[in-house]
Image (cartoon, rainbow, N blue to C red):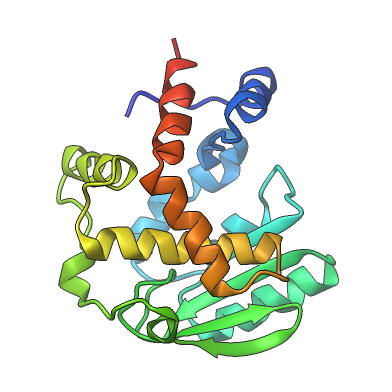
Length: 206
């Protein structure tokens, strides 16, 4: 997409100040995790390293939304984040996704405890896994990404992005309802604000 990975604090801080976004590419910040990558691939099974990444975020953000591969992992995450006194949402889609997929209800863990959310109760339509497949190539995935930002994605892709974004907004402002958060997220796409932010971020790479 034209973004240049870096661990230069000045570059990342400038991006954050000017656009509200920067990208922390894990291998640049955690060389040890990069070293165990080939071993993890050879094992072919989930290990502790599948859980470790989000817990060692070098930015140490005040607000966190993390997707996990199981409800059990969700509870472990929530125990850790509660001890850290973080404002967080940990989620697990009951059919296996580590995000809001709109293919099934979602288990939510937060400082308030565990809840179940069915986004179909908030105006979203249920989708099939085939409707939200990513691209088979990097280029195809990039086209899907841009289609969402430029507001000509499929309804399924667009809805999934809005649902996940709405939950992130809810994490920052728990007083807002999911319906309000959905409106804010949808408006960011429809108005072109999200696309403009990404374009500014890419322009800063030159």
